[in-house]
Image (cartoon, rainbow, N blue to C red):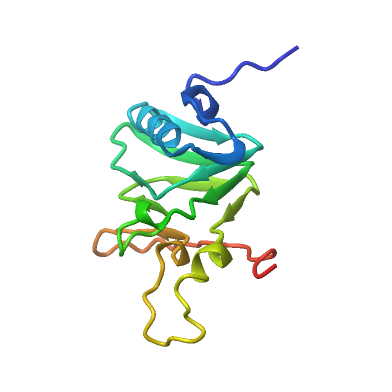
Length: 163
């Protein structure tokens, strides 16, 4: 028997992502899935199935007022666009901001394609080079109320860095 998806589960595939590993920009599909999930209520999951998704800069922003937890289940590979005209100078590639109850799970991969972008900056030869936007792979902004005594743990695995 096939398990039905939860009403609070939003797959990026349902919002038009192609996951073809080519130059198809899946950013809008990701943002549409985020907007639907953020407008939902309760415990919410965004599913990023296996596949290779090309993304320009994306900003997942809250608050998600009626959402208790929002889980991003990354099973596939997110691949940064190497078209640097898509980025503002201060942009990170993937940003999570003003979100309560955020969980990142799934064991997928964030591939910033740094080696493709860094070639144009000549940073090993020029110490005044500008930091490229894809050098900032993931930004997570944490805003805690004054007097908050909760501990926050963020675990990032770098097992496949610098291949």
